[in-house]
Figure 1 (cartoon, rainbow, N blue to C red):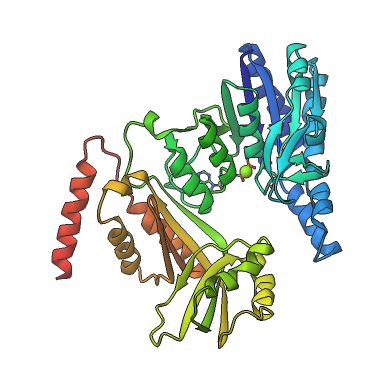
Figure 2 (tube, rainbow, N blue to C red; figure 1 turned 180 degrees about the horizontal axis):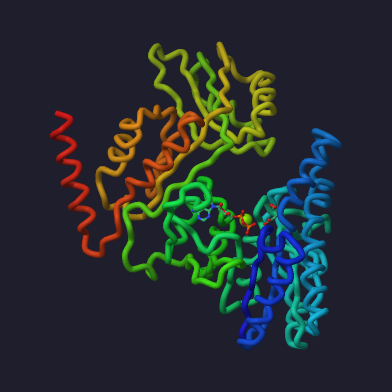
Length: 425
Ligand code: ADP
Ligand code: ASP
Ligand code: MG
């Protein structure tokens, strides 16, 4: 069986007209003799509304029930898609996670798919049916409904492609591919034809919402090529694939950013072995994700300052947990929820010197203060004040070196650095 998995995101199923369009896209693959597995998100805005309702009901909504609530949007969109296909004379039905079933592991709200039972769907495909599967959800070993993290339908699609050995996995969304930065923010953003899993993973986990980070991990582990394309425009999209399939690696592939970070500084923390673990243990136990961490070298060997970032929505809970943590002593806690993280990403960084300097210099020229820095092999992230965010994205995007197949970027960059160095002297 030649199988294609088609994933439709929230905006792509955001209205009745959009759902009618989605049905046409599905039919176009049937005409190409594919067996089609569809996986859909909730209509745009619905999941946010459900999350908001849970908060209005209780600030401590029980996780099992939270997942029952927030996964309910997908039921509606899936039924509407199959309803439309039925209307057009095609055999189709919706499948919720527990009906497939899709088994997950891990905690509620952040579970991961571990197994998908294939028998029923395969039988249905063979009979000419089009299964419309609810993304973002599954069941755990207690048979309770679970969800797999916001934006998780991307991961549902990748795992369906893996278990059904699909020939293609296509992510239909509201932009026509992965861009060098968010095209809705920076008009000069350029579409990337092919991007490696590693770069996409770094972009996704540093704020490029177009793909959910876990989905890229799953795709990378299982070597599944992904195509990201528009459900609005019929143009070619972006292929996410292994590095070996990409010929001309750029030094910097893209710029990503987050808007909802908060920074906490603990001033005068008693410096002793294990202190960082004591600070972060309760945060980890409460599923609070700590991102950037900086600890100053203690000048007197007794006290140090520790700064870290978290998502703004976790700020008050984190503050509460820190203040009631009896295992730590500090003089003062300073919080700032008006910070943002900007990152540049590219595998070319591994072999190219001077990228860090170039990034910092570009920000300095625009008078942008860097609050915290963190790096990986292929990413440099800086925390800046939120008021500087737009300026930082556009200057860094402008500074991206152009693609050259022959190492000319490297030479150009070195020459530029030399000139700048001379100027600085
Ligand atoms: P869907 O509902 O289809 O899953 P998302 O809203 O999750 O769509 O992701 C698509 C959005 O991601 C785009 O509308 C765009 O604003 C945003 N985005 C952020 N960074 C990028 C990028 N580098 N390339 C493309 N889109 C991006
Ligand atoms: N509907 C869920 C969300 O908004 C899952 C998804 O869209 O992928 O996060
Ligand atoms: Mg998404």
